[in-house]
Image (cartoon, rainbow, N blue to C red; front, top):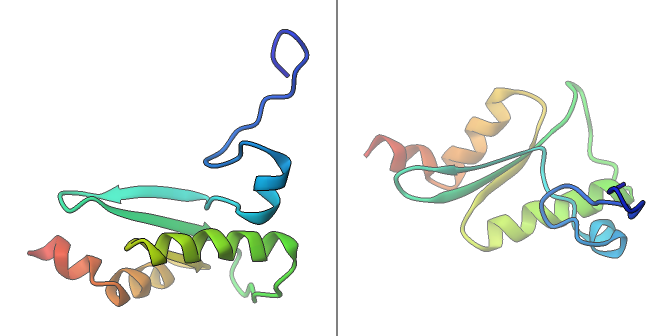
Amino acid sequence: MNPKGVPVRFGLGNKSAKANKALKSSDLIGIVRPHGIFIAVECKRPGWVYKGDERESAQLAFLDFVRENGGAACFATCWEDVQDELERCGVLTQIKS
């Protein structure tokens, strides 16, 4: 709440409850320099399996949006999941060049 008692929303793209239901930004957000590739990682506990509930579907919608716009995005239970995504979209190759 702000000093006037109005609820304050935090988070990337969290401008309204309706928007947040449809699209939930990831836990980790970044940009790979020098190429400017957007990265989004939704962190999950080891052993996690996608169930497709409302929250996970909104998280997946954000990851899909990032990928559709040339970024790297994934659910990750470990660093290897992130590495796999970076390799899949060619980010690691671009970093090394």
